[in-house]
Length: 210
Image 1: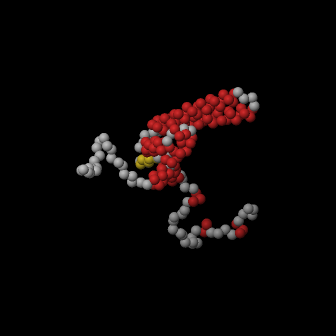
Image 2: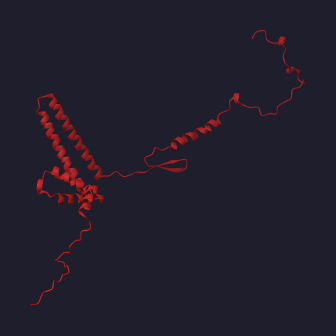
Image 3: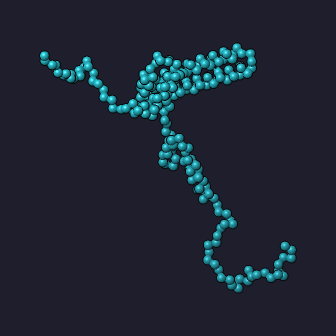
């Protein structure tokens, strides 16, 4: 009786290759903790889906969503914000209607305040969507001052102040000099008796009254 040898077949297109696991379970968990994918457990709790939703599938979808944002694809985020805007708007309507049906002033005040908070959050969500769909361009302002160009990127320009100071300097120089600061630049003269008219006045020639 001839014995058949076990021949290992090579993988074909119909037979996929067996993937070799290069990371341990601890390394996978550590990676999920660091990149935030482990928060899928929190999302699973709030989704209230129970055992019908596998937490591993949820973690995989969360990782895919994060990869889309990293690549610059915000379509998923825009859809989520749109859903949140609609939900917040419904919360506002529900709270406002409940406040209308109350007879106690304290209950009316509380429900009205909560309704306004929901309305404010809905407005903020709509503004976020508007910024994402229509981002504001970054504009550079150029000021021309004294022959050179100064580019201001969000910083208040200081060129007009310098120009004002430089213009005030010639004005100060053009003013006539005051009498009390004029200096005599002539050479000093020696005293002599040639001109007696300018000799010192004696006490008897002085004024009697000051």
